[in-house]
Amino acid sequence: MVVRVVVVGGGVSGVGSALAILQRLPSCNLTIIAEHFTPNTTGDGAAGFWEPHLTTGTPQEKIIQWCQETWELFCSWWQYKQQMGVSFVYGETISQDPVPEKSWQHVPFAFHSLSHSECVKFGPQYQSGFSFGTVTAEPLKFLPVLLEEVRALGGSVKMCRLTSLAEAAAEADIVINCSGLGARKLVPDPEVYPCRGQVMRVRAPWVGRYLCDASKKSFAYIIPNLETVVLGGTNQDHDWRLEVDPTDSQTIWDNCTALMPSLKVVHNYGHGGSGVTLFWGCSKEVADIACDLIHKHYGLPSRL
Amino acid sequence: MARVCVVGAGVVGLTTATQLQKALPPGSTVTIIADKFLKETTSDGAAGIFRPGLQFQGDSPEVTRRWLQDSFNFYKSILNSQDAASAGVKLISGFHFSSKYPKIVWNSLLLPILEEYRSCTEEELSFYRHKYGTFMTTILTECRRYLPYLTDKFTRQGGRIEKRHLKTLEELVGHYDIVCNCSGFGAKDLVGDELVTPIRGQIYKVRAPWIKNFYYVDYDMYIVPGFEYITLGGTRQFDSYIEETNKYDSMAIWERCLALIPSLKDAQVVQEWVGWRPYRPAVRVEEEFLTFDSGRSLKVVHNYGHGGYGVMTAPGTSIHAVKLVMKMLPSALSKL
Image (tube, rainbow over all chains, first blue to last red; front, side):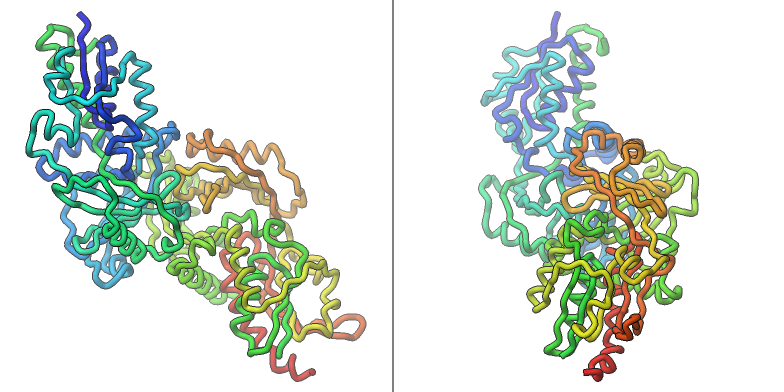
């Protein structure tokens, strides 16, 4: 039999999972069903800065495994596949608050803590900080390429708004739920909630290094992407607003120009965003799980 | 009160001219006389990175170190201001790799100046496939922005610019109290300095926005991202007067750069360019009381012979040259 796989969600997790499954099981019949595809997914607004965060509930070994696999993929894209939109950047993260240990610090390049003098050169209020070499991978650039790869492996794409997972299951042997925030209603899972992030994209081609302020009081970041620089941000739990908030814009602008005065001359565009650091590791694990399930339920070999 | 002329409108001439405007007494005038401006200058093609060669020198190690530190501080203050983008000054991180020469990846002139300068980690070395390497954060000045920025500053502060080719400095006698000779390679003919030698440099300017760091390998391979373009280089051909691009140099540069970063194959080539670094065994920053066969004389302060380090050391050498001008000024004015 030909296994029918439906992936719900067209963002980085959905497209990643679809691709990982098709790479493991090229003979399956796979469709991605989603309301939104690139350039309208959450990831499309992201700076795509590789750094695990907001993952406190997940077991650290999993975070490390997934972020490591994603890291390796992004590094090979930077070296060999520039159309994927990956840049390699160094920079600093500083904070007025103490900075906790990072379990993943062996993954990126040259992770080290900043000395006191390295912190206070940004202002006497900065007590701690760290630096590492990392990548930025822009979903806006790589999602279209990954979708092409999905199609090349025989997968298809359907734009449609599902009201329940049962609807997806109607024509599927297995459903892969990568619905992101949509899972709150779709599963339903009330534990899923939005953490609103607002960012500004500016043209500032001289910014080749990142600078992040991780303090609660003055949270801000300046992250170079391919053609633009992302200025952020906000972390507003349970905030569903998709519109740009001018007060947030002002705060982001003030905080970022305080960190980097040279930004004051730029013009800006506007958007909203989130994170991309774990997508490949998770997708491969999803493929493992899916294949095991398929093997268990349909007696097909888990690897062809 | 004082009429000062700066010969040369490259990065050294423009920097010296704007520094003079700050230092000279009120009522003084500064005039730049040059035959080449902006895109026509040697400065235009420079990658502009703050990174001295170990043979870079002034009259003594102390002078050399002072020029470097003054220059770095000067660019740093622009960097931390709102002028940084329009002036073309940015912070840049990058690497120097070698698989054959462990010593060359450390630069003793940079060590006391840079805040961040360390050995590469094992992962970094393995990623870039080299045996030895250092990582540093330094400053870059893009002349395609910096020269227009200085020109604008100079003219807004009342400076005059004259496009003119001088055969000899004698043409300026009687018109100016002091002349600053910032003529770069032009000094070879202008003041008959046989020590000025071209070091021919060939480069590509390409678009490859995914490259944000600079890379040097061994001696003559570099990838330096500027504001819009990346400079890929290079060559250092001593005493070569060839002005056209050489296809073998192009191939060597391209191959070496791609060996380090394969994705450069997708870079968009915008331009190939050749420049002559105006090399002199020591940069000449000194005063001279020039006398001509006619018996006439001229007070001159020289500031030329920066080789491949003109952009980098324009501020420090200009500060020094301006001090010499100020010292010479009273006697120059008393002749009136």
